[in-house]
Image (tube, rainbow, N blue to C red; front, side):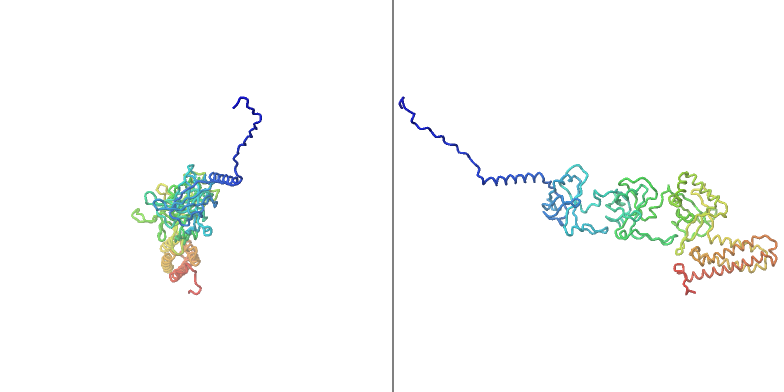
Length: 550
């Protein structure tokens, strides 16, 4: 190359443009689709609820991708897999729970299979006949979470939306009770039996019941429970008594309760005794009882333990013991009876009850003593049933009774008595016989003696027959006894006269005595006829007199 080279005629170099990489338009759609898919996956992951596992005893009615999990009839999940557990003894169900229900999966949540069920207490799950079985769910109250659960064998008896309280009853046996047996208050269904099991000692049963609100407020520490299963029939001094709660209780059993006296509401899980019947349940405790003893002088035939004690016709207690005691070389009847405070108070008006509550126990006892001493309050035996002939103790006023008082020095106190209807009549007749036999009336003596002997025999026969008859309810007996009482009263008036003209043949008293004896004889014959008729036709006591019967 020379030093003087000419470069003026050399052409200028043309710059080469740089190539750029471009994405083809055809890739835009797949990229957008991929981004959408990723977004959906992310969103699904963020909105997906937890996976849980539930073990069941069997897979009856459970299918993967079909069986739903519901809470309050709202779908909150679905079964995804159904497999056997590792030891092959149970069924392992895997399910997906909705994100919005994740907070319900606490430690004590419960699951169970809902299907049609028929029991003695009713029919449930009928809706699953068309929709298929589903898994029921009930959240708990724990703050801890959980993912593995064990399903219940049967639906729970109490759910979170059911208001009320649970109580525990103790009984010797379960009887005819079962799960779902109703609980009654004044014949109203207010709850049911939710569980039962043997007590820890194995000698009794523990029965858990649930009483719905607002009826649970009527359960107090003083409440008494008894079995209302079957028919409770009894024959006593009150007659034939039949009690039953409902047709449901006849089939499935049942429990009834009653609160004799008001009190504060019982706390949940309070324990009570379950009695066999209402009478046993309502028998007061010793703190609510006043015991008395009565020593009657007539036969105790027909009087038994449990016979009622009536105060002016109102039930206030019952007979607790009937027997004989040996005093002074003689065996005498002894009857112990109890007066129950709550029954006695139920007979009072509101005003009287309010006044009684202001009085102390000593003052109330003094009132009873004054009624006996001043008003003639006495205990008397009376026949209460036409069919059974059972007797009861009546406490009523007898103003003409001899003076007496309650002997509080004895324990229990002795209550004064007065002879019953027939015993009193027999005593009067014997007094008349004694007075007539003492009278020096030869002419009247023969007729009087014959009438007296006839009357005495008739009274003995009538007494045996009338022990099975309620003289206050049988019209013929009532009329005959009234005639006899009038005749006895006339004879007493005649015999009590001390007029010297009694010995005269035409004396007015003699005529009155003759009339009285004739009336006694007629009454005795009528009483004998009535007794013979009842012996031949005892069915008259139930059906009445047949017009064709002679």
